[in-house]
Structures are given as structure tokens and as C-alpha cells.
Amino acid sequence: MKRIITIGLSSVLILPVIFVAIATAEDSTSTQPTTTETSESELPKPDDSRLLERLEKRKTALKTRLTNLESAHIKSKCVASQGRVSSVRGRIKGIETSRTNVHRNIIGHLSELSTKLKNKGVDTTTLDADIAVLQAKIETFNADLVIYKQDVTDLEALDCKADPDAFQASLLASRTALEKVKQDATDIRSYIKDTIKPLLQTIRAELETQQPEETTTEGGQ
Image (cartoon, rainbow, N blue to C red; front, side, top):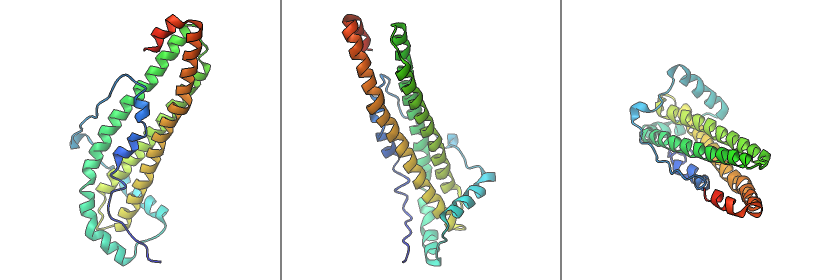
């Protein structure tokens, strides 16, 4: 069966979709971060000494080689596609800065709350454990975002006409990395919504039962 090769980078260029998934998490903080505009000179550049190694690994992982017709098709379209990647890398950097601020605010907010609860004599063992799990999920998100950034950077840097197989392999790697980042964002959102938020509601209800006047003020923070 003839394989169909798609040159369009639409799957790689849908970055905003990733971060819609953690909109609920943003609502957990009082600080609204702003996306940072990043100049091209500040963006990470490909590591030439390792680029070839990464490209070969991707081609090996792909296992299949392009036909002559497929190679010719990619060669005729890939340079134009690469021209779109530069703006994508800038968006990645800006969004990365924004998400870093959001995640820092969430962890800081929860840690501060835990300290206040401890001072009131509340057992925060479960809350502290949940904060640790959330932090681990955020670290996974950050690590996978680094991989995605590298894949996109390499996709722009490689000589696609000289090595269309590397271009196709890198494009597919970018799409796979993007899906991982999207899933990480979904995991963060779900954990906040399904685990941390219900726990905080339970703690608040218990405090209101014991000390209604004091916890009313506390709950507004």
C-alpha cells in the first residue's frame, strides 16, 4: 500500500492547544502571568556536534525509508515548511516562560496554604503528598517540553533537501513529542481538579465546622 507523506507542519504548529489543558490550574492562582516576547537571538540554537547523532537516531527509530517519489515531494516543499518553524520556536519560548510562572505560582500557593494549616494544627500529610505529586507532574511536563523544543529546533536546522529522511523522521518525532506535552498538561489539570481541589474543599469544610469565623477569612485568601 502506498504511503502518504504529509509535508504540512500543522501538527507541530498547534502549540496553544497544549496549554488550554491547564487553564483550570491557572485559576488556582491570583497572579495572571503574561507571555514573554522573545527575540530570535535569545532562542536556543541547535547543537551542531550532536545534531547529526539525533537525526540518525530518529531515522533509525522510523525504520522505513522514503521512496524516490516521496523524497522528491519532500524536497520540493520542505524548505518552505521550515520557514514557519522559526516563529514556532519563539512561541514555544514565550509559552514556556508563561507556564513556568503559572506552575511556580500554583506550587507556591499550595505550599503557603500548607504552612498556614500546620500553624493552625491541621494535619497536612495528605496535602503535602499531593503537592509533591503535582510537582513531579510539572517536572515531567518541563522535561518533555525540552525534548519538544529540541525536536522543533532540529527540524528547522537540518538540511531537508540533502536528507529528506531526516526531515520526515524529525517531523514525526516533533508530533510525538507534542502529544506527550499535551498529555502532561492534561495530567496536571486533572490532578488539580480531581485530587487537590476536592481535598482543599474537604479541609475548608472541616475548618469552617470547627472555627467558622476564622476560616471564613482564611478561605478568602
